Every structure is written in C-alpha cells, then in structure tokens.
Amino acid sequence: MMAASISHDAGVGLGGGLWFRASRLCLLLLIIIMPMEAITAAREMAMMGAAFFLFIHLWLTGQRQWRPTALLWPWILYAVTAALSLLSAVDPAYSLKELRAEVLKGLIVFYTGVHFIRSEEHLKQAWAALLAGVAIMGVFAVFYFFAEGGNLLHHYLRAGSLHNGYGGFGTYLVTVWPFVLLAPMAFPSPRLRPVWPVLIAVTAFSGYITFGRATWLGMLLEFGLCLVIMSRRRLRAALLGCLVCLALVAALLSVPGARHGERWSQLWNNPAKVGGTAGDLIALWRHSLGRIAQEPFTGIGLGRHSFSKAFPEFRATHQPLLWHSHNMFIELALQLGVQGLAAVLWAFIAIIAALWPHAPPARRDTVGLFGAAAALMVIGFSVRNLTDDFFVDDSGFMLWLLAGLALGARWWRDRAGRPGDDASPESQEP
Image (cartoon, rainbow, N blue to C red; front, top):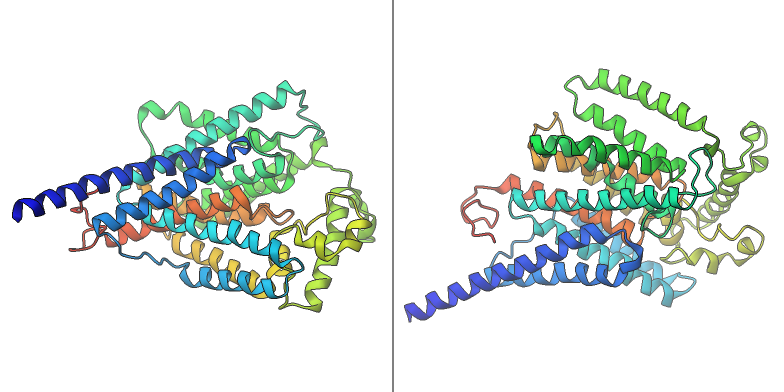
C-alpha cells in the first residue's frame, strides 16, 4: 500500500512538473508573439495552452489556492456591465461575440498571469521573453520603415513593424516601454550592459517613426515617471522630469511630421475649423459625448463596430476612419454605459495603487521593478488611448497579462515563507 502511494505521488509530481513546463513554454511564447499580426492562430493556441496546462498542473499538485488580487471586484463589475450591455446592444449577436473574444479571454489571460508566478525565476523568464519580443519588433520596425522609403521628417509612411499598423504598434511600444527602461536595474549583469542602451535606443526610435503623437506623449510620460519612482528625492525628480519631458515634447512637435493637417490657430476661436486629424476627433468626440449625456447608463453594446451600427448617419457624413470613438474612455462609456467606464477605471487605479513603489526598488529586486513598470504601463496605456481605442485584442491582452504577472508576483512575495502556503519557498516547483 505504501509503495503504491509513493508511486502515485511520484507520478503526480512528475506529471505536474511536465504540465507546468508546457504552460511556461506557451506563456513565454505568447509574450513574444502577442503583437505579431500574421500568426494569430499561434497566439490563440499559446494563450489557451498556457491557461489549460497551468490549470492541470495546479489541480494535480493540489496547489489550488485562489489568488483574487485587488482586481477581483473591478473584474466582476466589468464582466457584469459587459453582459448587461447585451440588453441594449444595437447588435446583440455581435456584442456577445465581443464579450467572449475580449472580456472572457482577457479574464483568462489576466488570471493565468496571476497564478503563473511560483518563484522569482518565473518572473525573470517572463521579463526576458518580453524584452526578446521588443527587440524583434523594434528591429523589424526600423528595417521596414527604411526599406519602404520612410522619411524621418514626414508622417506619410509610419512604422508598423510586424503589427497590423502604426496604431497597434505604437500602443505595444507604450505598453512595454517601462519594462525596457527598468530592465538594466533588474538584469545588471556586466555581460548585458552593452545590450541595454541599444535596446532602449531602438525602442525609442521605433516609437518616433510611428509618428503617433499620443505614442510620443505616452512614452515621454512613462520616461518622466520612471525618473520619479527611481529617485529618492521625488519632488526634485518630478520637476526635472517635467522640464525634460516638456523640452522633448517641444522638440517633437517642431518636426514637420508632428502636424497631420491641423490648423491649430483655430483651436480656441473655432474648433470646427481646426481640420486634420485633431479636427476629425473633435467632431467625433462631440457626437459621442452627446449620446452619452442623453443615456449615460445605457450602452450601445460591446465592440468597436457597435458605433457604426448605432450611428449610420454620422458614418455616412464623415470620413471612413471615424468608425468608432477613438478614445478608450469615451468608447467604454458609449458601449457599456458610465458604469462600464467606472469598472475599468477602478481596475486601472487598483493596479497603480497596488504596484506603485513607495520607495525606489532596489537593484535586482525583480518583483518590485516589474511591479513599478506595470504601474507606469497602465498610465502610459491610458494616455496613448486618449486619441484611439486599442483596449482590444492583443493590445488589451498584453496589458492584462503583464498586470497579472506583476500582481501575481506581488502576491507570491507577500506570502513567501508561510508554512503550508503554496507560495512557500519549500514548495516543489518545476
């Protein structure tokens, strides 16, 4: 009997280890290929494989302790408001599809990240995979930009790398930029020192050649806040960071590629005549905010195409690119009602509050540095999406995955060493 029990335990341990390795392989692959448009099937398989194999591992090893994190109630509210929006959706079948594709998958990706971290090494591997993906995307962005005849002073050709365009690629860069900036602190090996300036420069240059002004602003804000959180004299660092960022903003706005057809002299006197991209957005936002003011708690249904379905008159009288609200927060309120916007704002604020460092993280403090980068990521992501809505598909999944990894690592560290806890250093992890 004892021999049979030992054999069973050994089998469970071996099987559990194999399942976790399969999950880890899928998750690391997912982090690298997430922004690559041409391999969406591989992304879906990696996403579901990471969640499935991790679940089997936790079940077989008995490590089933739930990690709710600070986002439990925001997630519940978000899911409920998304489901209730089906009742008022302009196209319930489409919104139901979006509910499965965006909210349900986002929930799975987030909690996969939360429960994946079982040691500091797991977080380091995830961070290294992210940096590898950034390097690949950055190199291809620069190569394609110049190969296709890009001009550093004009926005007629804009870098999209392996993504589906400059908008998605710019959102990806804003999302990963804090992790690139803090990587030298997390991986201070002498062998890697020559790598970090090159990776930082390639990522920053890739952001520039997207010619996305919201991308520039998001990355500059993250850079300034990075100076603040890594300084022991944060007030002085904040003032210095503001001056540096303002100087960089002024320099960028002086580039001819920073003007997309606007007549800024009309902004205060007659906003309708600003023209260009900004003029289109002003007209779009006025329309969307007017609809929200009329029915603040009634959404038109989840999904960016709900806008075109709900407002065919507006679509018929404006340019084709204005097919959704081009502002993440306006879009959330329009689709789900203000209660849906409140749920996502609650989630974002909870992430920042949970991960914002009260003191500069120490060198090699992987958990603290990764958490700080995730907090900056949420801020930059929000700023980037003030003029567009990329809180969808791979952009949204990457945000949820990195936030989940950061919160899961914090949960693991806070509970490490407690007897009987699955996060204990004595637990057998593959």
